[in-house]
Length: 78
Image 1: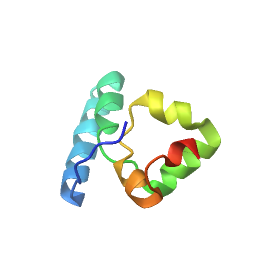
Image 2: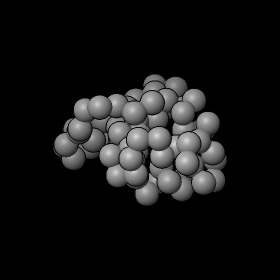
Image 3: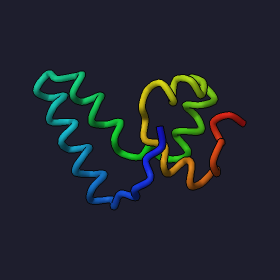
Image 4: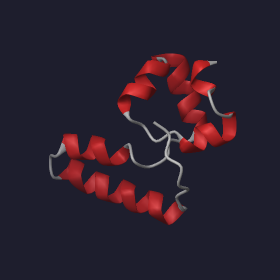
């Protein structure tokens, strides 16, 4: 589901680095959980919607705030 807050590049990089640390430590579940808290880039969200379907994005708990800001509310159902 979309998250209302906007993250800075430094915040996104910090999440990415922490997630990679978890992956390096063998915690794939922790990695997956954490990486989904960073906003997915709109271009990637669009591709994922086309390739995997809107339900994949919705049920996956991805942060789609940037895609929603770019494409508008309800873009997943269009």
